[in-house]
Image (cartoon, rainbow, N blue to C red; front, top):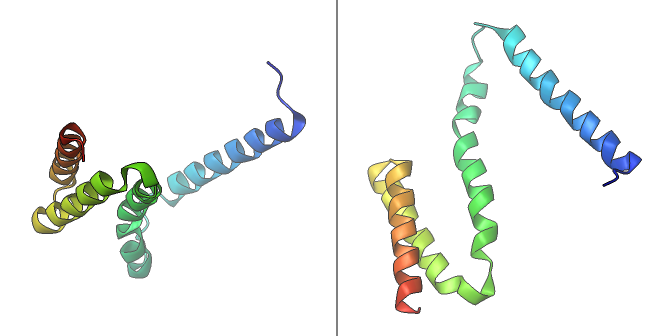
Length: 102
């Protein structure tokens, strides 16, 4: 297996960027984060989760069970505020609809 120079350069640059962000985090130590940044960081997990889920909803073959499961997942997440419960309900609804042939 060979790796092209472009791919190798991309891997090296991304590795450097990853380690630089980690080093900056360590150098900041116990400094306080400004309130604006703290508020913005509060939304990072849900933004990342949304970025992972939304492309999967766009599959035209299984749009109905995926969309229903996503709505149920969102409702549980809003009601209970527990991500694990929302994921559990969403998976159960999706698998139930797939088993029912919807």
